[in-house]
Length: 386
Image (cartoon, rainbow, N blue to C red):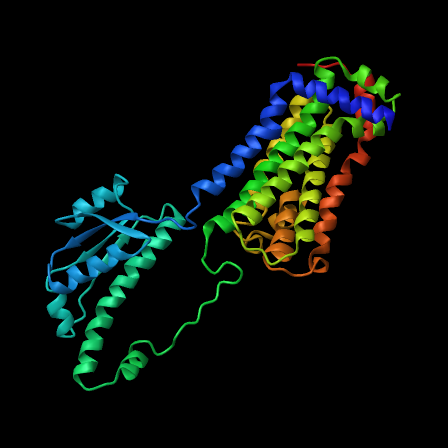
């Protein structure tokens, strides 16, 4: 314990003299936390710019235009004289879509001649495209529903009969655990931990690699009496304290301050935070053990962290990917983090339903045990090659 304490103090001195640790352990993680949670604080995109091409200029088309502008998601920013002008506006990214009312829209609708109301939208961004499509489609359906309601009312139908005719099947929608369909809840709970794990990977490999780079490895091992377990424990202990503090602050900020929905217990949250930090640091040490080189180990960590954003399955389901990719996804700690979060915290199911993912995180944390001897040999015999 005395040797671990002295090595930990030595590591604190190294961290204090190298600003990289301050930025990668504290400042950048905090920046990531506040950045993602603040720029999506409204939950959903609002006031997406759309245009209108109204060649009919009737009371019906003006009413539909006002209703479209009243939607929270869309905002009418311009009226265009023809489709070509509106198309150019989309190409110039001035608007995300537009609705087109041809001439005689209202008269054809009243005469049951089925006028064609067209809408065009930019689907380069899936989120904004889907929201604009939803509002434009809703407006086009409201026009026919209004005329149909007026006709049925003139025929003496009751409001209940009219409603049953216009909407024969009523949809009762219940988004579980996120009733407001808040995109911040979906994205911040996945992207932020993935970014934090990038720092866990890189700093773990960097701190060991710099011992070779700055010719401090033999001094480090001498403090541990050449016991690699003692040496590694003392080195990663200060990093672990900072990393677990940042992780728990992130979780408190999300669930305690911002009030993100979570059906799971506080113990599930704390357990996941601990497992994530241990898995991140363990993988970083393991990467250096595989390639005892500062450059190569950090390259492995960077590659694995970058692929984690896709392999975790938060934006595109793993079940829809190629079977080979589904198998490879299990080699990424963030995949198991996300599955445990989704099962036990977001949905509130018992830990026993996600024990395999929790166990996988602790397996990642134990990976350094297989390469400790190789790291020891590197520290005692290797010469740093730039």
